[in-house]
Amino acid sequence: MAAIINVAGATPVSVGTGSAGALEPLGYTRDGCSLTFESFVYEVHSDDYGGESGPPIDIQYMGETVRIRLELTKYDEAVADKIRCRLRGGTAGTVGATGSLMLSSNGVTSLAYRICLISPTRPLNFPICV
Image 1 (cartoon, helix red, strand yellow):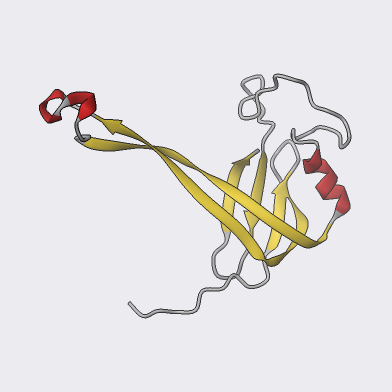
Image 2 (image 1 turned 30 degrees about the vertical axis):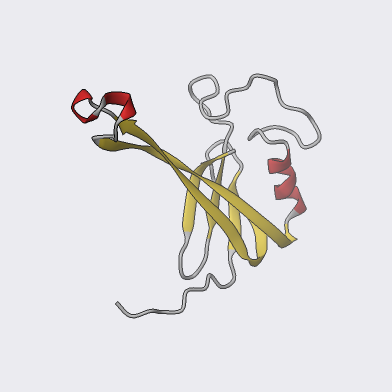
């Protein structure tokens, strides 16, 4: 495989802030964005390999999270206010309800956001962001 240049280029950032998760343009990054992927795994042990003291017989994938760091130099202040309150549908400057479940509030509506990084070379969609 040939090595090719991989740069994101101009990366508009859009955020799903409404009840239907419709995207609104937030702004543009400075020098792209920083993404740190972290996977979660579970080691499966068996007595025929020494139990918990021995090596795992397999490793089970349990999902992953991504830490997204954006330095925005150009952005829409009204859209930024919608995500500053931390809970989708909240009001900027008002603390959300303590104990709110962010991923499945009341079993129907999520209080999390959607973030799309619309790079020409590698667009990324993160449907559940807190």
